[in-house]
Length: 168
Ligand SMILES: CC(C)(COP(=O)(O)OP(=O)(O)OC[C@H]1O[C@@H](n2cnc3c(N)ncnc32)[C@H](O)[C@@H]1OP(=O)(O)O)[C@@H](O)C(=O)NCCC(=O)NCCS
Image (cartoon, rainbow, N blue to C red; front, top):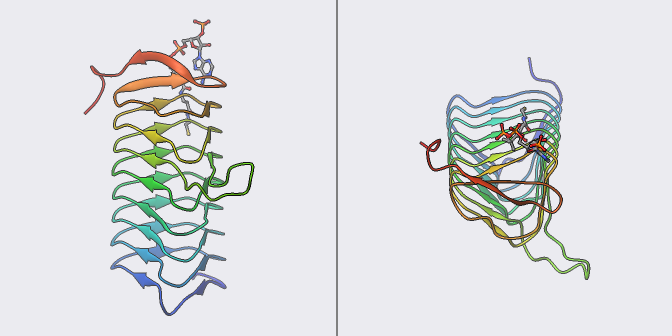
């Protein structure tokens, strides 16, 4: 039995959505059918999540962002305001995405394509675009646009190889 969730009456929760305990779901949040939300998840205003997603414990979203269908976001990851995440993408634990620049201006989170794999502990800078079928190695600092079908890693991340034979 879920305990102590705070779910806005203005949130739209799809069919067969499972929500754990101690979650906060703000106004205008949308969660698609068959999505699983684990524990201690905070989804701020106008976070849109598609169908068949898995949002692990302690994920936070700053709001005004769009997460596609079949997306996994593992525990402790932070989804910045304005982020877009394409279908079938996999966000590993402790990924940090940024919105503000150092002048505190809201640039908006990254635009992340479909079927993207973001390794554990990556930091994704504001305003960048990450192409489809990309792999970002663990602990990478992503501060420039990443083309589709490539693996990048390091701090700052650099091109490593093409993924064209591995992509769906
Ligand atoms: C990026 C990645 C996919 C590359 O895998 P790969 O192609 O098999 O690469 P290899 O393991 O053969 O490593 C090749 C070289 O890159 C280095 N390297 C690999 N990943 C790296 C990373 N994330 N950061 C820095 N260097 C890395 C290796 O040390 C190796 O260097 P060397 O040639 O000097 O020995 C993989 O290392 C990775 O980071 N996967 C993400 C894992 C993850 O976050 N899993 C979460 C599960 S919940």
